[in-house]
Amino acid sequence: MEAVPARARVYIACVAVAALLCLLPLPGVRTPWWAAALLAALYAVCERVARSRFVGISHPAGTFYPVLLAGAFLLPASAAALVVVPGALLSQVAQRPVALRRVWRAAQLVLGVWAAAEVHRLLGGRDAVAAGDVPYALGPAGAAVLAFCLVLALLDGGILALAERVPVRRAWRGLVARSLAPIAVHGLAGLMMAVLWRSPYGPVSALLVLLPMCVSWWAFAQYHRERAAHQATIRALVQAVDIKDGYTRGHSERVGQASMMIARELGMADERVEVLRFAGILHDVGKLGVPTRLLRKDGPLTPEERRVIELHPEYGHEMVRGIGFLGEARAAVLHHHERLDGSGYPYGLVGRQIPESARVVAVADAFDAMTSTRSYSRARPVSVALAELERCAGSQFDPVMVAALVEAVGRAGWHPAVTADDEETRPSRVPPPGTRLAGRPGAHR
Image (cartoon, rainbow, N blue to C red; front, top):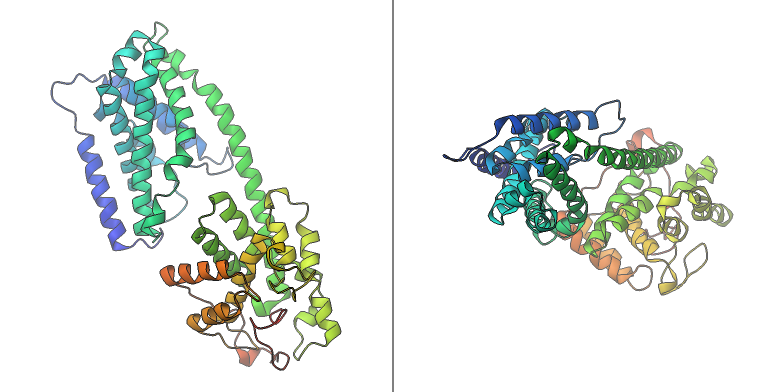
């Protein structure tokens, strides 16, 4: 969202105006402003700590939803929504535009909390909380959490469609399902806070509910820290490949992007989409085990030299075998040069014997190779590259994966980059006679 389209800015402005209207107090409604101020300060401090250098990572938004939902269970809707504002507007933002992202986050949460508070009030939840009737309070609290979740998902889908240009039919897919369970846990903690707040022990006892939440958050933060370390390792491996084989600089990242486009088009779960992105990024990591003189050889490769280069999938598989979170990406690294007709390498697998992840990466790899300018070949137009993939579908490539890429590129477009330096500053490199990028195995190194 760094270069935010005009239509997305209009959308954010409309959401912000709606949020401002939600903050207006209704006449005749008694509001305990001291409670709203205390909860707002607590939320702001918690969010600031969650994103501090002391913690070490930027934790996903919503770390302290229990405070917001406790406000929705305790306060009138406008006051509950006001709890959001200081923490959201003062939170640290890593990406630009900073001000717009803060306004968007604040407006989104204001609307969500306001809707939750209104649903909770209409169902009589505030009376149940005041009376400490926990079993009865669960119903209104559950409905309020669902309203909160639905509002956030609705707004998130809109910004994905307008700012990130995600297709409308996919913008809202899975948003509620992914967020409902964790928000329900936060809602239960928020309900416990509200009940204790209204108990004889007062607000201080309510703060004790945050202790187990902080412990669970800390454990989750360690998971994100470990994941960030894994991603740094992957980036280091890819940079090493780019340095060793400068003719294909940036190729790995683009294959990861194309693999992700195919996976999304096939409707795969987000976890698999991420794994396939890693598979695309790492598919050529085995080139680190290939002599540099072969990768940078000016002329055609001899049969013996080609056999050495064709060992790179096995080298790559050995390199990533111990990285547990990669999952099926390891199979893609090993088998991305297999062909459906069995003439690929390293094992000559046929049809469905080739893992699905490898069939995805094979199409993404060939597509980027054809649409990128290199010292030994000019980039083909996207339409020509897609036509070549379709021509080879069924013999070299999986037709399902080819069709998914054609559909995804047709909708979102593709912007290939030059991956080699100017030909005048590079030695010419001539491919073997008759070589076609998608027409024979191993045609692109």
